[in-house]
Image: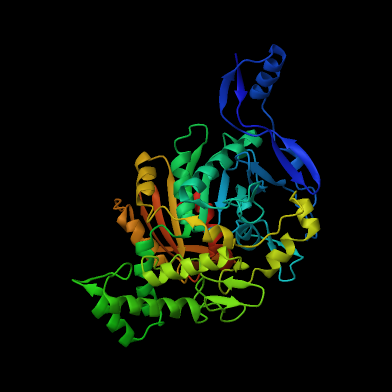
Length: 502
């Protein structure tokens, strides 16, 4: 009677070549030949190091190859699902540096956007061919793991091409991916581990952390969520206030909203039943999302011009709305259902973040030489977001309060909720209201925080601290904080990781 791994051998394709790759699974009992018994026991007890086949030996676009190691390949989480990862070791001491997982949001958008446009070691240039080193890369002090999740996003794929999923399945598959990563990189299993992300990462990060905290083999130390969707209610309600106090709404429109959506000093823009209120909220939504305002940074220009909600050509329909706002109203639901119907009828649908030009990213990542360097199968095509994933994605949670309270109640994990203060997709006010709703004891009252540019002290925003929890704003940054304010973002991240005062 011996241990047997019940997950069969998987396949890893690289072009036309097929390589066999051992996969993780659950160990069960079965009868087996003594010789095979010995082989399995040796494999089970053997400690391996980073997979040499996944190491990136040469990355096109760089004038000089990096001094740190980096890896790209697949974390095979089930018989059919293969999640693409890109792992960059710390530029400091990899053996002693924390491992930080990064998840971009959407749902349905690629974390390679975070790597190549936000806080990775090199940033894509407008020509779509050149990479420049990032002096404020987060891998200056940590090992960064970028995961494209769920399957169907970026270079991640499923053999059965079934990309219908939801919050619960995604968190479980992300957990399996973390386990598989540490199996493939056992030298990092004892390192401090952090989970981070932005946007719909406000769902991804805490739901994954809730699973990881139950696994004593993973040294979870904390999580960071940037401009995260942690509560639909607070995000919806706060956007109307944000729009008014940033000059988007006039005083007459604001007065009408107050009259029809508010009662007893409280306003409900999230799920009001007053028909006039519903109509007024839709007007605000259309003004914010479809009239050329950059929802990711109010004061930045709109790349590509005013997109509206949708653009149609003869061959393709491009949508710019992820359906994250005002989902409780019929007009919001009908918009999503109409898109799903078009998609099921065979329409070619592409999903692009509004006012954000991802052409250079797509050009670079779909270059055959780049794909070969990253060990990506030839047949896969990279897009920044997957319409198929988002249109078939099931949203299970309304907010993350239960997950945050569970993590805080353990008193073992440090949590950072940060927000660029000119983002409208997941605005800072909604994030602050969510943090306040956790009703934690205030440890440090709201105050400015500072960082240095060329030796000069600058105001970075504001911070409020609670036991094991901090809420921090980044002045002048939008949805993608490290893109807009790289120096401030690195200062914030460094203090979080090094447990220094903000």
